[in-house]
Length: 251
Image (tube, rainbow, N blue to C red; front, top):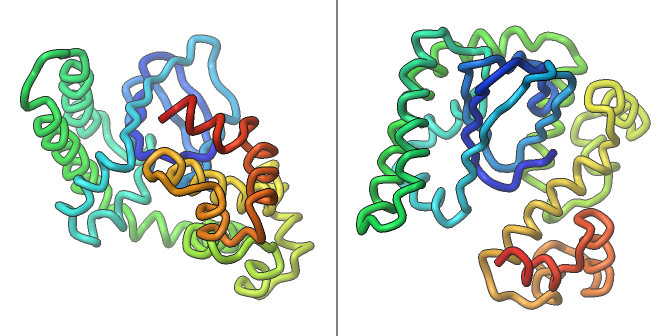
C-alpha cells in the first residue's frame, strides 16, 4: 500500500518479508521502524502467525513534529527499516512505543497531545541515533543499476507528482525509455510506473480533502487536472470513492 500518513510499525508476532519502495527487508518479532508519508510498502510473504501494529499520525500532528526537527534528521529517517537495528536498540524504541500506546488509551488527560508529541519526538531521535551511522553504508550497497533507478524514480515522484502525471517526464529525468522504466518497475514492485505516480497523486488528494475545505475544482487545479470531472474520475478509480464520499466518510 501507499502511505499517506507518518507511521510507526512494530511486529508483535511472526515475521514477514516486506518491500519499502524498492528495497526488501525482514520484519520480525520485536522489530519496529518509522515509515514516512509517501512511501510504498508491500508485504511480499509472511508467516501464518504474523501480526503487527501500526501507529498512524495525522498530517496536522506531524506538522508540529517536523518544525522541531533539523533537516538532517528527517533526511535520515527516510532510511529507517526493521532489519537495520540491533536487538538492544529495538528494546529502547519498543519501550517508547509502549508508552505511546498506553497514552492513546487515556481518554481524559489535559496534556495528552503535548505528551504525545514529546514521546514521538523521543522515538524519532532514538531512531535517528540508531540509523544515521548506517545510512552511508546502506546507500553504498545500492550498487545495482535497477535499485538506483527505482530510488531516483520514487524521489522524483515525491517531488513532481503534483505537476507531472506522465511517465515520459520521469523516464526523461532518469535518462531511460518509458518502456524500460515500465519493465523494471514490474520486476521490482510488481506494478507499473503509472500506478506508482497515481499512488502519490491519490495520497496528496486524500490529505487535501481531509485537511482543507477546498472545493473539488480547487483541488483539481492544485493537482494539475484539466477539470473537476477528470479529477473525480481519477479519484474514484484509484480510491474507490468519490472525493465527496471520501471526505464525508473520513473527515
